[in-house]
Image (cartoon, rainbow, N blue to C red; front, side, top):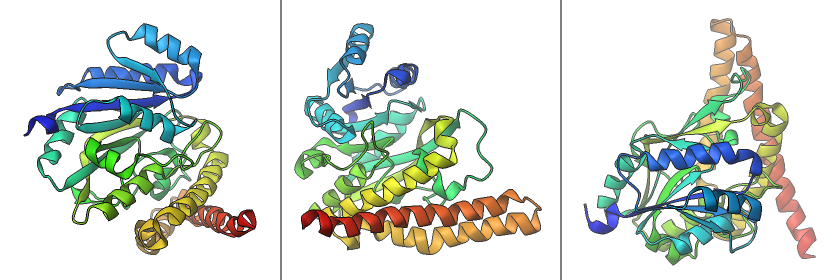
Amino acid sequence: MTASATSVSVIICAYADNRREQLHRAIASVLAQRTKATEIIVVIDHNMPLWAFFFATYPAITVIVNEGARGLSGARNTGVRRASSEILAFLDDDAVAAPDWLEKMLPHYRNPSVIGLGGQVLPMWQVDRPRWFPEEFQWVVGCSYRGQPEKVEPVRNPIGCNMSFRRSIVELTGGFREGIGRTAADAAGCEETELCIRALQAIPGSLILYDPDVSVHHQVTAERAAWGYFRKRCLAEGRSKTQVVNAVGALDGLSSEQRYVMRVLPAGVLRGLGDAMLKFDMWGLARAAGIFFGLGYTTMGYVGARLSRPRRQA
């Protein structure tokens, strides 16, 4: 492996006081890696008391404030500008990386065509997993979902909780687009989707891989296990998809979604109905309904944002 492919900066972005314990665990999981990171960068998003606490608590790592716009995109870009390594790995503040996370990630970058990598995100339910919650919609809580690859395969984009890129690619594309993505007040997403599409458009023949063995665990709070959050997150995802399409075009912006809607979701509905009729698991009906309503809410968010755009322009 080349020297550049062994040099990795891990970037963790945080904003919330009530997630301090989760951030401690995220940092500890990176410090415990079998393959050590060159540096760990924690970016605090417009919360000076939180920055002061972690700056004093971890003198051996880099703790900085978000110098960009409030939100995850600005925080990630701040971390990228501070990082010194060729490989940039991103971990959420409420996630815990497996001890071999970096060990299994870095060998993929021996292939010069690989510009990015994502891995499996396993849910850590704070409460019992709701029996109505369809696995096809685990992206709602930031986790891997049914329909993703089960082996190493090229993908359009990874889940933001567990992803890495070559630094040169992030710089070439101009970084994460501010104005797209999550803030403390909004459950939106897709900033990593938009960046990946621009990167693949800019470098024909390049690859972004998904390796399920490159894994992290992501905490799912009781709030996120509720139906109200499910609905809110689906609507926000639809709005975010509108921004992606406006930025990169519908052909690339909705390429993965077409397969998901045409193949993965119908199979999930049939699976839920089969669980109810063949296994006498009546919650299968609820899971099938969850898929139906989840798609409906996401579509509502997308269509509503598309229709409101001409009015805003006018």
